[in-house]
Image (cartoon, chains in turn orange, blue):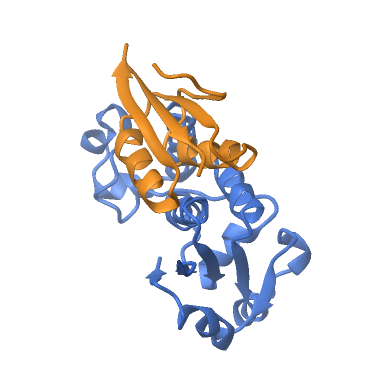
Length: 76
Length: 159
């Protein structure tokens, strides 16, 4: 997995909390920095794709590992 | 790119129906939308400082009942005293177990994200509601105020 600057563990949280927490964390980050998000909500896979497309924050990576979903999002 | 706008009318005051306005608004705000919710009639219950919303299986054949209760309690059984508070308790526990946010949390997130909450003044007068029982930071206005924003909106929902 690529390097990241900040991490957000949204395990156990259901829609729409992972997105809301991610948005909040990204707001406090500088442009170009990368956020690593961990989630257990299977709906978050499509949600983070949609979030990235609509907010312009690039989804660099999305993968499943050990029943958890990992996302890397670069702040625009 | 011009900011997108979401306008919602919230008319329901039960626990289950309280979720869609707050889930959609908080999410839309996170996506960069400008959002306003107009609360009217029973929707005003969603603005109380102390939320005491209930869910009822009565007249709701689509509601999944725990432990096969729908087989033990036919339609009339759902009207039994205590059924509503029991179902409300079970629903709240299920939501907490599944990591679904509480309404208070979602409502706070909406306010943090500057979602505008507008209470229908006519409903407040109609039911003699005490505005001191409502949360701070809301606006009191009428239908024309809703259209001022809704007329420019990209998405408009009646819930």
